[in-house]
Each structure stands twice: as C-alpha cells, then as structure tokens.
Length: 510
Ligand SMILES: [Zn+2]
Image (tube, rainbow, N blue to C red; front, side, top):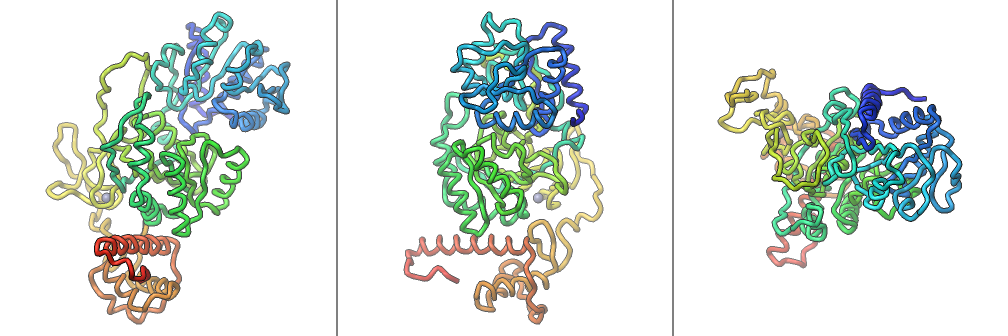
C-alpha cells in the first residue's frame, strides 16, 4: 500500500466536507503526475469499507487495463470490467471499471453508489445526460481532471476542488521544474478556428508542416535537447510522420504514436524510450501517451488556443525521476504567447457556459530572450539562460512601480562564457578541444582537413592557428549533436542557394 501525499489527503478531506454540505457532483483538480489514480484508489477503498459499490469510468478503452493494474497495486482486487469479451467481466464485483463508450451502448448499468469519472473535462455528452437522469440522481459522481476548464462544466458538476496547482507541486518538488525556449515563430495568419474555438486542424497542419519548420525542430533539438528522452507533439499524423522522418534522417532514432497505436505497441515504444533506443517519440496530441513515461523534454509543434490541451501536453514532461533536474520545453508553436507559462493557467471555478469577454491576464506574458530564445518572466530583465540584458536596460528586476533595482548576481561576464571557450549545447568547452573534436568529425566524415578550420572560422571569425597541432579528440555527445545540427544547417543553406541560382547539377556534398 502506497502512502498518501499531503495534497491527496487534502483532496479527501475537502471531498468529505463538500459532500456533507450537499455536493453530489464535485470535480477534483489534480495536476498530471500528482497521483490521480492513487487518489481514486483511496476513495474507492474508503467507499468499499462502508460496503458501497463503485464504478470507475475511463475515457478510452485503452486505459482499462492499466487502470485495473494500478488498482491492483493499491490492493483493490475485487474488480470487474465492463467491456465485451473482457476476461475480467464480472458484474458481481463491487468495483467496476468501464469506458465511456461501452457505457453509452449499455442500457443497464450495474447498481452503484459512487461513480468516479476520469478526465471529466472531456465532457462525454451521453454519459452526462445519463447521470443527470432520475435513475442516478442520488448517486455521488466525482470528476477527476488536471484541467477542468471545459465550457459549460458547471451545468453538469456542482463544485470544483483544487487540491494542488502545478506551481505548488513544482514548489514542493513533486513535479519537475521546467525551462521554456521558443526557437521558432510560425506564421498562422491563414489559420481559422474550429467549433471548439481551437485552430482549424487542417489549416494548422498546412501552416506547421513545412520543411523548414520541421527541419528546425530537429536542428534545435540537436543543439539544445541534450539527448533527453523527448515527446514531440505534432498537429496531425502526416506532420508527426514528417517530424519522425526528419529525426531519422539525422540518425536520431524516433518513435511514432497516434490514436490508432495499440496498447501493446505503446508499451514497446515506452520501453524503447526508457532503454534509450528511442530518443524522441513524435505523436499527435495523443494524450494517453507518455502518462507514465520518463520524459525530460517536450517539443511543442502544436499551436493551440486550448488551455486544456496545453496543460495536458506539457504535463507529460513534469513527472519527477531520478537524476532529472528539469523538463526542457522547446516551444515551436508560440504557445507561450497565447498562454504564458503553463503554471499561469488558473481558474477558481467551473465554467458556466455563458460566453464572456476573454479574461484579463493577471500576470503579464513572459518575454523571449532575443539572443537564446529562452522564455523568462516579464519582470526579469536579465536572461537566466544566457545572461543577456537588452541594451539600455540595467540588469535587475523591475519593482512593482516599474522602476529598476539592481540585482547582484556575481560576475555577469561569466554568463557570456569563459575566454577562449565555445558554447556547445549546455556547456562551454575550450577552443582547443572544440577544434580537436572538429578534426575527428572531419576525418570520420571524410571531409578535407581544411573543413575543421573553416568550421572553426565560421564560429569564431578567427583561424585556429595556435591549435593546429592539437591531436584529434573523441567527440562528446553534445559535440556530436552540435556537428549534426551544423551539417543540416549547412546542407539547407546550400540547397537554398543552389535553388536560387538554378544550379541543380552540382553535387550536394561538401
Ligand atoms: Zn538568453
């Protein structure tokens, strides 16, 4: 039996309190990775202790087995499954697990005292209609969600219990910290909206699935991704396939998952991520993927107006793990401009469905560093990632009244990097080492010896004269990725110039 965390205890206490005050349809908001299934198991056990029968409802068939497994870990074994031909079918069991779709098709539901609805923000219409009927009026229905902000939720549920926010969970060290970079700014000028108020998917795919944007995803990851296990969110299947192909072309093994990927295949993909065989998995906002994976970098190539989608996507990277310092978010979608930081998103009540003007932001939108694309809180003047301070502005933090006060942070020059060093990925290496590794790369790729000199010159605008005698050195992983990214960059600019000059006959090899 696993123990409960304070925020889970708080959720249980609040649930009891609200139920005593008459709530029959409360929603519990709990961030992804905060132990939602564990909380559900505890609620079920307490209900069972009073002899009550419980039904746990999942949004998709594919989630049934993992839910049953997870309950078993918590000692709940008297479980039956409502699903045609499922080996665990047993209507006599006091705990039933079912998918929304199956329930919609069944006329008779087993008699229950408590229903728990997972991912209740998905607003299953037929299900909601049924629980509003006389038959189930007395039954307690508890909704669970990390983002209970769907339109009109207040018409079906009567209370919102926020037991912990993502920011609080990060503060407490139960979810991982994160850093955001915005390496790309896609042009969405021709993209309209759909019925739900999000971008029209077809038009969005057209805007995002462009060779340059797809190539940038890969070069950015090579430059900044530090080889982390990564989940890439794409617009549609073709887009995700293109991202996968581009990674593979750069010799980065990349998996692929969409809504049609079976549970067994997903497990294989997950194992390959955990063993390091796959560095990246491209997927189509397929939110059942990666729930329990050790993901340390999110590539966001899916612009969205939906706060719910954003929270669900980024939440995949916030699980803590051994040796994991933070989650890196590479925002290729400009989502930070729409939503700010994911931790800024907050609503203290359920939406009543009445259309109102866009709520005023309580926090100013974060800002992008023009030098390294790091996204920082608006009031920070100095970039925490590279130390850049916009010209004419003192390093420091803006005070409430808008004036500046200096913040001493030691030698700010140090952020520029030590003298005679080159920045490769997240670290600085000595220029001699940089040149030594370029030599190895050149010989391995069978480039002319002059290549290393040219490459060095293109970075430093100086020739590596004093290092000509350094022996070649084995490449570090970061240097290897840097070279790959550099190669792609050059190949692209070469292809572009060739295209512009109409010179198609030349060999593309350097
Ligand atoms: Zn910066």
